[in-house]
Length: 537
Image 1 (cartoon, rainbow, N blue to C red):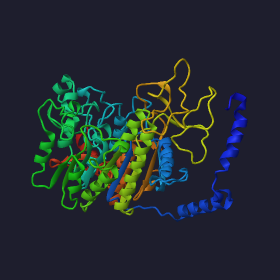
Image 2 (cartoon, one colour):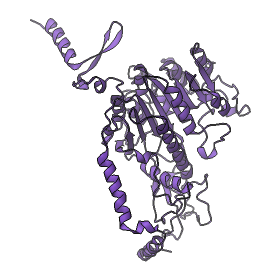
Image 3 (cartoon, helix red, strand yellow):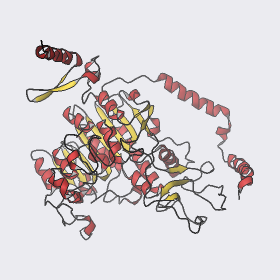
Image 4 (tube, rainbow, N blue to C red):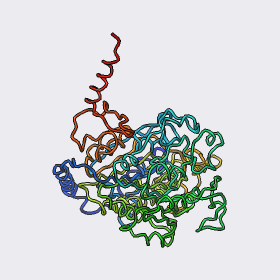
């Protein structure tokens, strides 16, 4: 095959051979011109939606960088027996697109905890910390106190909206946890995960905060074992010791959650049968924990036991949308990230396709005129899309152009990860390896136990009320503020009140034991009067 100087001739042959597979209509210039004109006219006809967002649907693809979106788009089409490249994902239809910078305060490349604090709480912070400012230090409980920051989920709840969390990870994982918890360590899932010093200094675990911080109406994901006492058998895997309860304080948080909902219609479920029996029309609260830890990958999910992310999203929306004031729902495709960490591109892409189906379900159940829908990633991964594959070739396949070591390589590879397999200076020969298998681990340039994150900007896609705010290149912390502005929740409510003042000069002062927003003009007058009274003569 191609070697050094032979590369150009080989490319010429590939181009000549590949072009023969083009669709007949694509050879006609008018095909592309007419498509462009339709797209152009659609853009010209677009009117800004400046409504107040009654609902916010926030879809977070953990680790879903732009390469992942592109590759998943192709896979989605190929699963439908198409070439794939021309496929339109549901998220592709969003008219407003921007980029978010993902670095944390202390690291160039961030983790899911620091990024979640940015896009949910509107404040950038340090690696491994959730719901706290950058004044807090990773793992140091004492630095957490006084540095807590709240999320848009709480802002929405305080505004009278219903709120929910849907995830494919444990509900105590970094992304969902940041919506309700404050922790100097993202790893304090239960009290058993906390060091003695943290307990002594008054910090509490993430699971316990799920019950006490914010009244979350819908909680769907995994994480049963962090909610029950040490050694309690799991209902689905009673013989598996790793699935048994982890708590050392003897608390059963599932029972406590149910007790807190006395007088309300509240359901706790852990399997599909009970989940399907939940009537959204009569349900006030739902906690559904389908696994002891994270949910199974979509490709390995048992449909008889666990619903898909599209199904859990639908149930959540149907419960939440009964509130006449609207809702905020966080939906996380969390295992996209975990598949990438394992170097398993097939798993990551199938997770992304399932995530896109959930987005489609969300759009189906809501109206664009009153629901702001945002899709984004928290960070990316070092996965590359390379080689010169033919049009329609499997996205999980091999490049037809071999490397200079006379060995083939896959179209998708990783910059680092568990797929580094060089022996005696030679890569493995994958000519007879099925690289499309769900368990195949892509080759990686650098050996690491787990693939790291990568630091490039991530896409932010939006549609619905004030979706035009999501454009350009912004700090990731901007996202929470833009969503809040659109829905008139949180500190900046100018959108629904029509106030001209700058939110930077607004404040919150205690009034009669409660909190009341004071406009910048009124606050300036008040402060001026106080200063005049106390000024030295």
